[in-house]
Image (tube, rainbow, N blue to C red; front, side, top):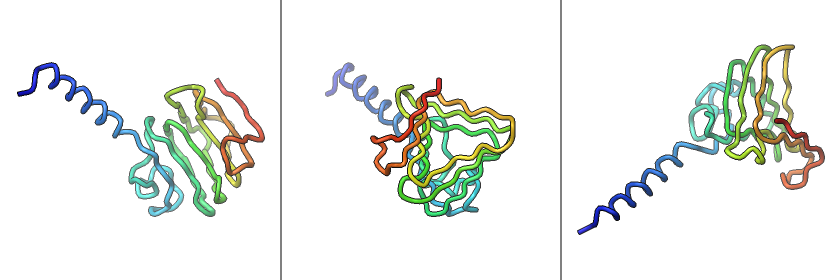
Length: 146
């Protein structure tokens, strides 16, 4: 027979695993309309990124449009394939890693982000890193945003 303490420990461990399972690494697969950030079918696993998800767009000739407020834990663009993300005018977005010393946005080789228009805010509560290297640990340029 299990003691009440061991049952409590099992419940706490189970809760931790359940809480961690809600976060995901989302990869752009362009299986939906192939351009809209909010088309759930464009992401693997399916569903647009949320504030607890790391989003990665590294698909040949990807053209991703963000036309409304968005969130992600972090965003990585490019690295192996030419990938382009465009954020429309008047759009607000938040990229917030769990630790502000981690990358909020990483733009690697062949990655590009375009901010269109004159209004809107992208809040990054981590670092921004722009690298010509495929290996993310060797940046060519780094900008810290707080």
